[in-house]
Length: 258
Length: 263
Ligand SMILES: Nc1ncnc2c1ncn2[C@@H]1O[C@H](COP(=O)(O)OP(=O)(O)O)[C@@H](O)[C@H]1O
Ligand SMILES: [Mg+2]
Image (cartoon, rainbow over all chains, first blue to last red; front, top):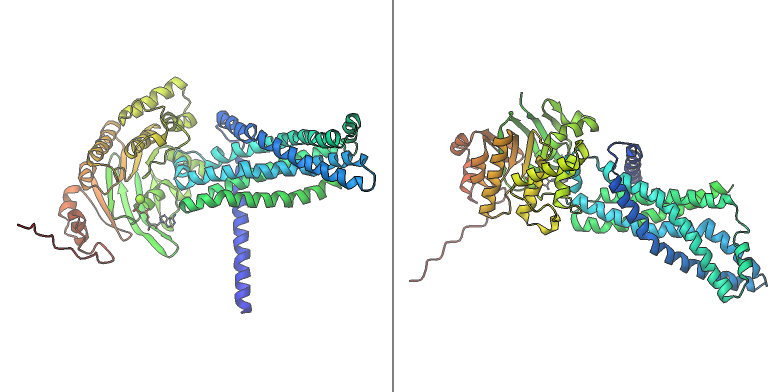
């Protein structure tokens, strides 16, 4: 009884170590392949397009919705002890430091991370990845690197977009509905923020971009077992990368804020 | 020295032994045909030769280089001289036919766009697929996909070609067309090749030597004439295409008496 328990725990630990090791090796190989020849500019541009440009609507809409509902909550909360003026300051703080990078990261892990897993998964089960190998092309270099670069660049840029949209989402509620002065809102929004906060937000977004692309590509690359495997890859990629985004968000915040 | 040298190759997946102690040599310019029932590990053999799988024991040497011992860069160099035609063609489905065939050229050769175009046209013409270059793989039939796969495999002018069941699932006419293409490639380009097939007719046309894989072992590897008269019961059963005999592990369902036509 106790032995089987140990057995199970041991097997679980071994499997987790194995999985993590596999991920780490592939991630290392991806970083090592970034500067390898030949450079495929067309492919990279295409990834910038599909990761970045095509994600703008999703990021704009979710940032707008989240910043608006947050403003409603803040206005309501601060009204209870007659401190409505604080709402815009806290709104700015929350959006810049947490909401924009995390919302962007989570939405993109759903939008692009899952797409990467599905695409690479299909390529894996239809032997297209083997075909790449046979044409003397490293799939890590050809498939992983452009996706990684695109999301390391695009997630921070989209985070900036999200902050900007968040400003206007708060404006709509606090100025438009609650009737605060537009001039005061414009000043107060940035009052508690320093340049450092933008930098931290961008660091976070950069790490989230890395997580999204690497986990998505890894889950796709390791797809096994036909249609069912291809179906599982995106789901599992979204769950894993969302989890790692939230966990790393905690540690990045802890580390970078002190 | 043999161009492809498979020495004591064994490969198992978990408890399932797929290949055990397979030995095969292919000389320069020779065309070897590998026969064998479905699921006997023919594809696994080719994947070991390409370095997509690592042997459990034994080794595969291509032009004297042991595949499993090469670094990745060296392996890619060797792979540039091998063209692989997959069973299901494995075309890149996000690219057009043209981009598929041009893929290796664009990545490994310093060619101008005009030279790439010329070479792609040449390869497509060789497999009888001229004028399809702007189509996507989804718009092609099975036989056309295979032929585009051939064109992609020969684009880099490899010295070795591996065909994995190039005719399975095609009608007899298309089977003959594919057989002729393989023969043309062999005579025009002097390519060393390994072809896996179930189609005995084209096997005897293409082959310089025929090998038969049975239960993970290579039980014959000889010229077509010798192969035909080999007394081994498995070979004779395979040639007859009969369900009764030692070939199957489980006994086949009994043969029904054909009904006599009512007079
Ligand atoms: N990657 C793999 N993992 C597990 N088993 C495999 C794998 N590849 C092939 N096999 C097994 O090896 C056997 C031979 O497969 P294969 O070489 O594809 O047969 P065929 O001779 O029809 O091409 C099959 O029974 C298959 O189950
Ligand atoms: Mg096969």
